[in-house]
Amino acid sequence: MEYERLLARIISGLLMEPRHRRSVGSRLRRKGGPPVIEVVGLDRTQQNDLLWKLRQTYSGRLPVNVPEVPVDKGVAESFWYLSTRMSGLNGPPGRRRPAFPRFHLGLLAHTWAADHADLGLDRLQHAHRALVRHLGSREQEEEAVGREQLLRELEPPLSAGGMVGAVLAVLSTVVRFLTGRPRPDRVALRWWGRALRVPKGGAFSNREAIAIRLFYFFRPRPPRPDDPDEVRAEAARQEASRVANRNEYLIAAFLADIDAQYGLLRRLNRNQPPLMLLQVHHAEGRAVLDTYLAAHRTLRRVVGRRTITHPVVLVVSDDDAGARLAAAPLDELESVLDTWALRLEGDARERRLVRVTVRGTAAGSRPATSEEGQ
Image (tube, rainbow, N blue to C red):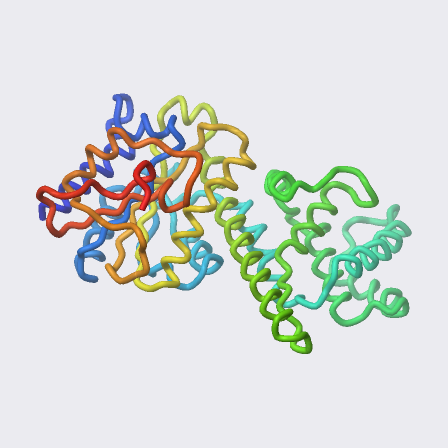
């Protein structure tokens, strides 16, 4: 169909094809990355066919995900799924996947914190000091002592000190995290240290301080049921804001992992960026997409440089999926991309999203972009 050919040509340009010629993709790489392109006006069968044809075109040539499941299940689950369904970075086609150490480390803390919502940082730090003292008495012993044995030995002295239940579970997690094999990716730990602005020095080693801060950052703090209604309402509002912030950091870690695959040499060689093919069918998926758009500002702050390798993202969505930006004719998308530039201020949708429709692609208003607002 005509819209498929047009979108295929546009995606090809954003992916810098051919690699060693000027293209819209090479221009936008230097300008803060390409916008997210959202296409509406297709039924579910057409959406699915479009994404799978693009998947088949680029599979084995560059990292591209399998577009099986809509991103309607929340940030953690949706992006975990994406991280396991991208392949084609290097090596034999379809066999090598990009690594996501920063994202998976954040996901570990996110998953762990959900089961330890009632634990304060002060209790964790107190328990950790006891752990360090106990481990200090074993410094000269063989490091090959099994972790399970170590944990069994730790339980009596810690329990005797009044640290039981949740705190003991925390210590088990921290021990596994800090002394386990394989060790946590040092680059991933360093990234989270910068992201969360963990100061160096103090009572803990830098690695331990980052681990504690990371776990604490993802700890949920829901309203207490015995508080007055207005206090619970304010606490719920603050927790919702913290949840959004945590999700932005998770996606920023995901994007940082993609950027890390493309070092200076790969950027100079104009290696093609990944292609992400997403489906948004419900308001939950719209919230995930909005978080993805907002996460780029966090990413830029942590990475600290302008040239970042962003994936090319094509989203297909239903017209009623909760978008605020109006969609306009698809046949004007190429001219919009030729002049598009990232704005440093404004709403995330205004800054990074371009919505187009395959219906009524004759004369009409230009697609809503970051330069024109809502």
